Image (cartoon, rainbow, N blue to C red; front, side, top):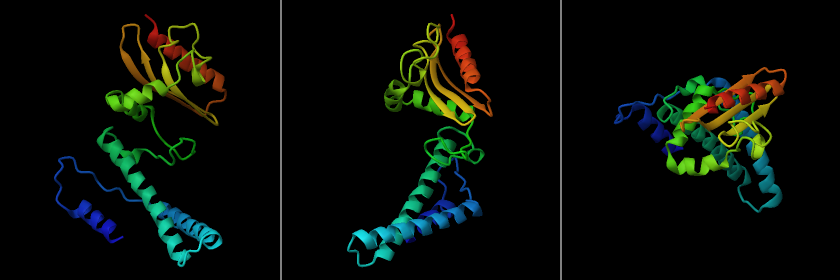
Length: 212
């Protein structure tokens, strides 16, 4: 705790050696209340595990430090994501909300612009792109795109990840034009009534991008 407090004070009031200063964004009170509830629940759950299945001599203290560490790691990860968005993607992290890593939370709030910037960042980072690109489904060939864009110019050219939750459809990835240019793209549809129409529209856009 002392080290964390020292690091915070140095970060906020210390000498700024970087030209681009990263402002410290404040966490809203509602978030702190949520974290406090999570801390209490984790504390109780871990204490029950220690009391029931271990011979810990100080189960309540051990469970509290473990729960506090989990909450601290979440806060650290949140700050790391904010810095990545600001430094690497040159976007304001306060404009977006990333509630979880899976993208299934209704509280997630991103934009196609941010996703495209992330895809471009990966494209220009060889160590990331070498593993990321082969893992994407290929239009008309495999994965979630196996049955889409078949027998069109998009087949084999579109490498993308689909996204589907209630009344939301998304498609993001890379495609190659007939001229050999690589394009990063992201399309999101919110509040749709039929997913089939949204997917068909995406497929037509991909065909248009890959037509000679």
